[in-house]
Length: 156
Image (cartoon, rainbow, N blue to C red):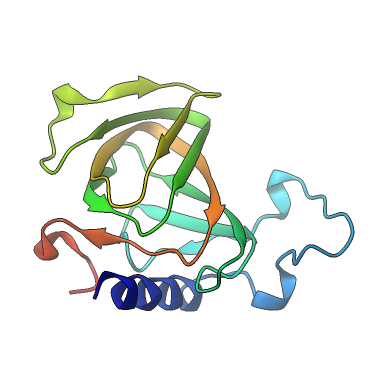
């Protein structure tokens, strides 16, 4: 059931992307871009205060992906899990992040630019942004998000 849900989430994330699928890198030759060339769009699975910019990959496929999330100051990442490893690098701002099924601001660890976090599949996590925060995520799909409490899911 989680696999089906994960694939659904991947398809939904792709549908909400502002970057056209044909513009994403597919492993053919070199690809270079500057931050001002990224195309930001809404993240249906995260709601208001979060934006996504796809860089490479198809989240619904078993292939590498890279994308960035831009989080507004104070944006709360509610407890959730992913079907595959999540690898996060903080590019700007401050990400407060933690392991667990309950949101607890005091349990988070402060990650500054250059900080990294790696979480295995199915491990619950949560956090929040201090200042506008940009993080880069990469891994191998298929990718998706499942909230611990379904009422936290902005798609519901």
